[in-house]
Length: 309
Image (cartoon, rainbow, N blue to C red; front, top):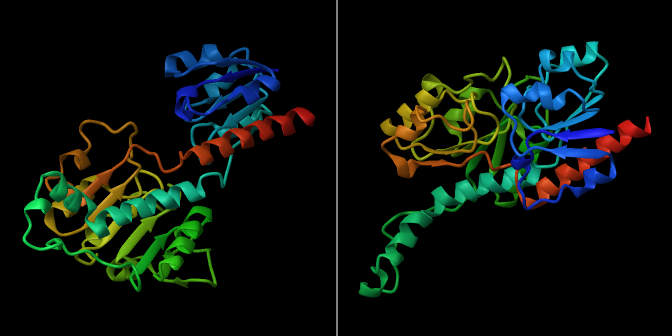
């Protein structure tokens, strides 16, 4: 089997991918641009891709038998064309739930504990000049009893909710599909979740139900001091509206995903004035060492299963 890895760099070079060498003849490219994809895929039996698009045109002139996606989302592959051409497509689910939930809480603690302020206070030499043993000019809070609203209570959202439980938070959720009825937590409508939650965390997919789900009108209903996190997909929050809200009221936002990645220089979130109210990270929620190791092993298992059949 000829195996081609199209975007090796997205997996991180601290992760070993030698496991694929045991499954076939491997050619690996760190990065593949759109005009290179067709030629690189042409003679492959199996393609491993994270974000490189495998279109109908790419499939037309190829010997492809299996497309392995090193992610859960499958929107970079033309699934209809693959089905027509009898090309199997395999993704990986559930590998990053803990990793995403952990980053969510890292962002929460960043805002709740005001650690930047207190670290700077010490680093700038102020503590040693103090007349008293402590300095608590920037109020911080406990999570106990805070209402946490989860948008999308799938595998990742449930993992996050369980961790919020451990901090004695009150967890409620909104089902973007309208089909999720989880007996462990109270289900509420979106307006109630936004207007009553102290912390709001997004863990749903991007689809026709969730595109621009959060906009200027409904985000304006959020409580002063509320924390909004998006570790789902860019496009679920209208970024222009969020940037406007952050500069108008005391809303804190932790954003790991944006609509166009890598982020464009024109993105309004890069231009907010109240920068202390915003944490932007470059889509890292999925990518702990453990999560990426699980991911590679699960992709390898998808290939083994395919070969066995």
